[in-house]
Length: 90
Image 1 (tube, helix red, strand yellow):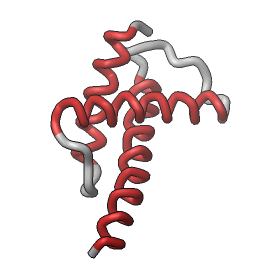
Image 2 (image 1 turned 180 degrees about the vertical axis):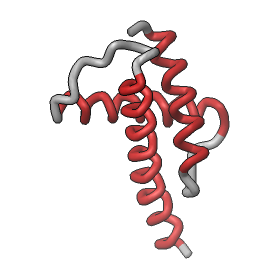
Image 3 (image 1 turned 135 degrees about the horizontal axis):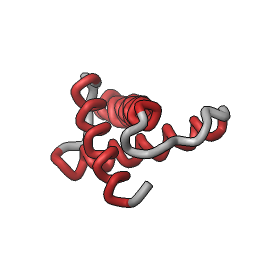
């Protein structure tokens, strides 16, 4: 999979994850792109570690599910870190 398709998947996965999640999130288009790309990396690492199999590219549904789940996981951890900081300062 090329870098352009990876960025496209990251952006769309980030948008979907942000729509599903209700917590604090990094803002803007760049934040969404970062969430999606980091989520795709996290999801891909987890999928490889558990032996999920080879991903076939941008048109494979497994690729999208893994990227979205990874982005949601990233947003969950981000919310725990940022939410914890806000509670401690209040």
